[in-house]
Image (cartoon, rainbow, N blue to C red; front, side, top):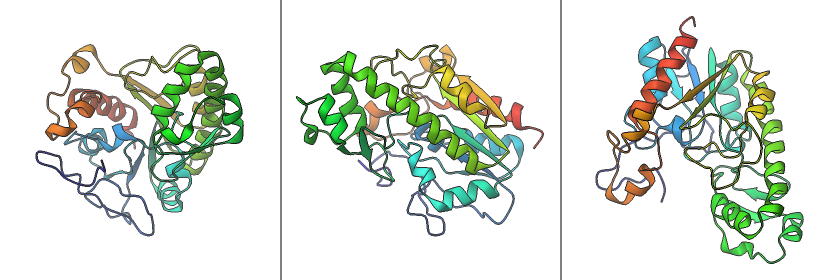
Length: 276
């Protein structure tokens, strides 16, 4: 299912494009000739099923234009490979980069689609050597593929996880370098960062997948600040209350953080960025 096609009861994201970018962002389209804060990230930043996601709430709180460059299921590649996004981030007064999972980006083991980063394109010979019994033609999405690899062999999967984590640190440092000196790194989830790298596919929660505290500390040195937002128990317990979705989207909505969590995230960011 694509996110820019409306069904009965679905939320209108007012999809738009900027300049020569091939990426479709959430609207309404903003004037980038005026000062603005740029928000880069995945599904949470985009605000899937959320009428007023945290970038819009931060705009209200700071009374400064905030441009939502979030993309559903995005990995770091979607942004580093798009010259428009890199330029827009460099020109912004400040940039908020949501911590995205390590699964949706190309690496030594497999390739993803350059714009729809959750789409699995194909394995490398190295991954096929590690998992000779797996038919990779069966997979279209990274999470499905990785879940299967973990199920086949948790021991061999450890090597895949380490590669994803190594690539994530390098790629995130590249993105933060492009974003410039006024960059806030945002952890937004239903749980705190893992303290070790033993995380498997069974501990997903609201993501981001495979990211540890040590990895965050490595990349936070390239940002102005690191803001950790763990949704409260009250926000998580509300489930899909306040979300807008069609009947076919109910299962997907149940996996997302709701409006109260976005309000909590916005409040933390406003407190940190109020001096801008």
